[in-house]
Length: 355
Ligand SMILES: [Zn+2]
Ligand SMILES: [Zn+2]
Ligand SMILES: [Zn+2]
Image (cartoon, rainbow, N blue to C red; front, side, top):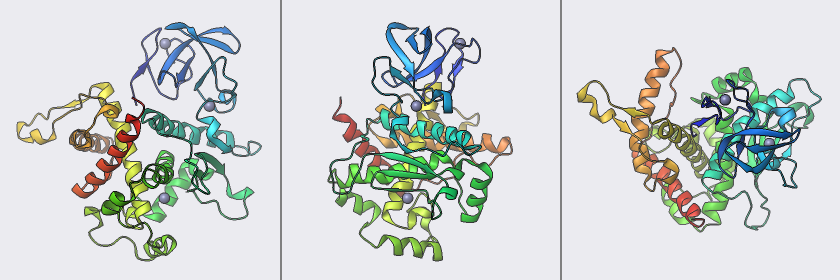
């Protein structure tokens, strides 16, 4: 994520802000500029960009409910922003706490959508039988016949809104023996299944996919059942980013995809802040890092990784300094690096159509 600041007072803004916490100016995210912009109010529902008075804007219709801070052009016929429009089902807002849960889910989803927009990836299907556009539904067990499983089916990403509850998430994480479980991680993982259809299957890249990830035609439900009974095979770390990735080539892809987006977002932040590493001990020159270019514009993923590895090691140490767990708990083996590069190349190929 980029470093954004208030146009009036230069205070640093978080992506989630709808107001500058120092000067009080209303702020929003403008997807045309892919930037947070400071606003000047013209009337109750009409604003313009402080830096560009000709750009008339208004907030997403969900601002009042979940503080959505994304903007639309004032003359747009849409009620909601580009991200909120992708919601097929929202939580039942008559239940206490659901608006807060939704707000948390939507905030994480916005980070996914930001990356997808930066990568110029499509939200539309290609017309493949049974496929639909990328959509989201936020469901809860109490209004459903069966327990709601977080997952993806034909473009529709389902999230159990309990995932917004930190205690539930932590208990589930412990039960499942996972190193990492976040709402953002769910969104990134599930979007991977949609983009497998779009970029790999419909893009004609199934053969090179199979060389790296294996044959996805192997029975999916049996593979998952086997994984839940027996766990990951010994030595999985050399081939997979996580234990769950070993369950099936589709899960391997989705886990690797999620990590690709984690790394890209974190490295855009590192680049934007100008983070450099130069260990005081000259013998540790291998831990030096200097991310001098925007990772979204970098051709070779190995250059991103060469900086990411030392930066993540430094962040893990900083995290432990505060008594927290590791910031990034994954090991990137050479094989996993190849898979990440494959994903990066597919995304680069896709976005190059629009240059
Ligand atoms: Zn300000
Ligand atoms: Zn919105
Ligand atoms: Zn999955």
